[in-house]
Image (cartoon, rainbow, N blue to C red; front, top):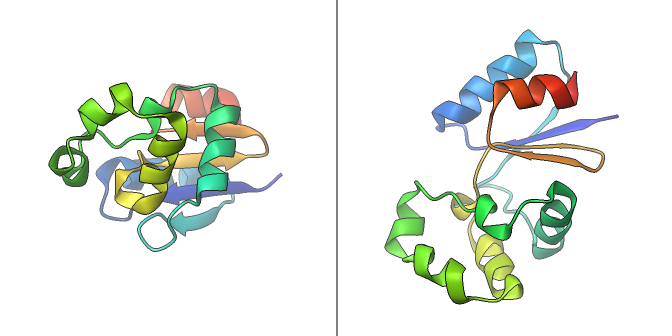
Length: 118
């Protein structure tokens, strides 16, 4: 089953996750999040499959998140509005994201990846 690794090359966590994939001989297709923004349909599916709340898909440490004051919007906006916001700019999306079939992992936690992917 193919693995898709969605990342931003300048992100240190993404670089660490990519190195982990390579060190563990896991083949993957790479997608650069700021060049190929996730679409609303993709995000909806990933959120559903991950079992995580939409808020976990936001890059809360990003400049854009802070500039747009999204912290407050997450509390009041509808799911549809939040997905629309995420789809508007890949830099708003937490990364890396790893996709394998219905498995969706957001962020890099080595022990979690070890358990779910290998």
